[in-house]
Image 1: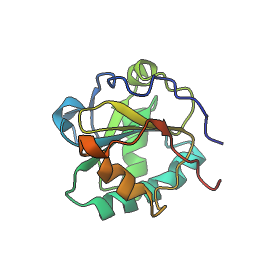
Image 2 (image 1 turned 90 degrees about the vertical axis):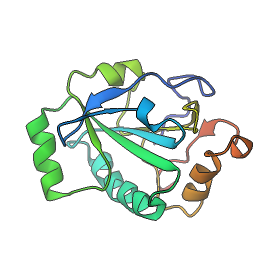
Image 3 (image 1 turned 135 degrees about the vertical axis):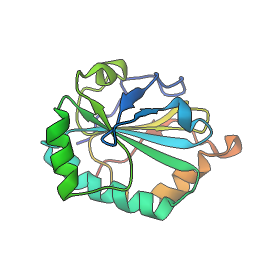
Length: 163
């Protein structure tokens, strides 16, 4: 079940995020300014997280080169374990490595998976503490609306998976 209240105040600026990726480069949230960004915290040992990866992959395929980006942050696992997992199940988005859990702490993440949706100026708009059904037909239009200031909906909690 998804947590009902966000750990960070919705409507506030997102914390900084800059981590190494599985592709041996640094990825920062700041580099994606101007795009709506889903920041998704997960671990490969987490069954709901693994299930959600498929939905996130399909969402990214639907988005294409649109105004929405996804940063998936693996929490607390050694790089080799994460690398082996994604060699068997590749995804079309960057996997960031938060081995020391510093990003998890900065974002006040208490459960996995957790997703934050930021508008184009990287203000926290939506939150889900638990899995989300990214295949829901309303997901992509909601994310695309966040790309323009006039389309920014009120802050809220994303609906949990299967509820």
